[in-house]
Amino acid sequence: MTKTWYIQVIFRTHSDGKVFVMNISGADVCFYWAEFPAPYLETIRTQRLTDLAKFPMIRLHHTKQRNLKDVEERNTLIREFLAIVCCLADGNGKMGHLRRDPLSPIHQRNS
Image (cartoon, rainbow, N blue to C red):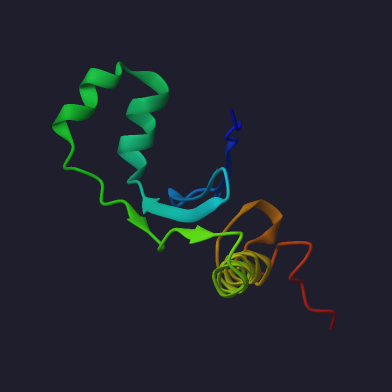
């Protein structure tokens, strides 16, 4: 009997409600992402989940599922993962101190 591992890694941006999830199930990996309006997130945080029925459905996007055992698919997965990390590192994801903001300690320009 083989054991299948199931792991999720979540990259949540700071204030704009964008969420990236890396889903690993055995040797298969894919990325999911969605954008949640602030009132939706506030409802999850402070009210009952049944209150979410008043909101329109959230569109969930995903990449093609990649198999880590296949060399080409693994290379593509690594490129996709690096694109997400580079986007966040460049400040385009508005995540904490990584956001592109003149007051952010990481992206300040020295005059």
